[in-house]
Structures are given as structure tokens and as C-alpha cells.
Image 1 (cartoon, rainbow, N blue to C red):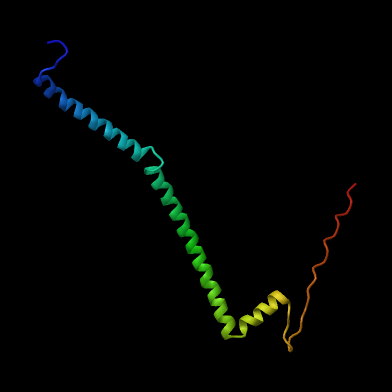
Image 2 (image 1 turned 90 degrees about the vertical axis):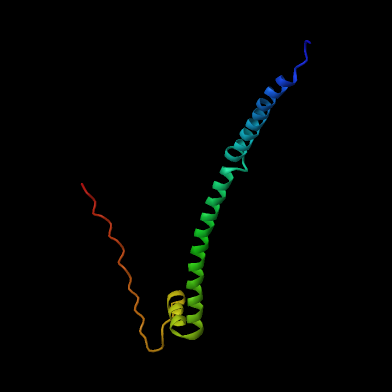
Length: 113
């Protein structure tokens, strides 16, 4: 009989066909893991973004701590208020004397002949 395969021939090719299908599925899954945008590259990109955000959060937490300490100092004592008044507003106390030091202007270099 031409064109018809025997049962034995089909039983021999079935495992080969199954192995080929499984190999194709394995290759497609590996592609998705290593090459696609939803795979390892995406995880690496997200890890870098998380690391950058953690660094930013640490800096902002430190800044918030400094600001909270400054607010507490402003609420409880007058030293911080006086410091801010002196540095930002140029104020002086009633029993203090203000001295302003003016640097002399740089001299022009004498002409050379």
C-alpha cells in the first residue's frame, strides 16, 4: 500500500514529533524570558528603578529629619529664631554693635613699558 503508514511507523514518529513540539515550546519560552520586554531586561530595569527610588527616599528622609529638627527648635527656643533673623534678615540685638567690614577694591596693575 502506497501512501499509508503502518501502525509501527506511526509509533516510531510520534515520540519524534512530540520531542520537536516540546523543543519549539522550550525555545519560545526561553525567548520570552531572555529577549522579550517582559523578561529579564524588564526585571533588571525595575531593579535599577527601585534602587534609584530608594536612594532618593533616603535623601528625602534625611532632609525631612533636618527640617523636623529645625521646626522643633523654632517652636521651643529663641536661639534658632535669632539665628535666622541674623543670617537672613541682618538683624542685631539691642545690646550689640554692628561692624561692617568693607574689603578695599583691587588696585589696577601699573602700566608696563
